[in-house]
Image (cartoon, rainbow, N blue to C red; front, side, top):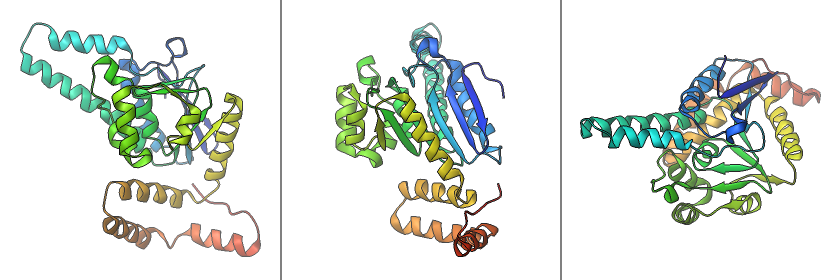
Length: 271
């Protein structure tokens, strides 16, 4: 697919989804908000894709929502016309923005965020929707919304609590503190930190290849089980995975995995 604000690179079973406005620090314009769900939907149709790496072009992951978007929303809501319709429009826009992040979360394969430079505001929403997160030590994170007189509303508050806990989310959301990759690792926001962007990308690429070598139907099942269990009780999560394995456990992949183990070779799985 052709995008104006994104770039997709396919490299065998690994896809790189790049935010591609480097001259604007990959700030999220209206077009980017619209194109991300399209990209996610397209990736879900590519059977050969087993892992997605999400990164920013240039120095930064993303500076968050483009301020021109906020200005346009303010003009629409505060301008002349019916106030109820204006607020309905704003609510629909927020729900659409939330759906953008949910589309990233719902990519059927693991999504690994590789974070360099700024990861601000909506950028934190975006990485919270990813399965794994890695960063450079000098990356800068900030839940910026409160300083713009906005209640964070696109997923940070909801998705980060299971990752770093209520207290951490509350502190970072109230204060809009800017913190680096080392603190992000200490509080559990990222899985690992690297001194250079080259080392970061080398690790992420290696990890992506490692995951891509595993049974794709099993990895997709693991992702579904993780997300379902996050949002449901233990009992409901157990019921879900029982149903999944009842349907998917007896597969060509389990035969290949067991055969490869017994024969002391690397397994090969179909897409």
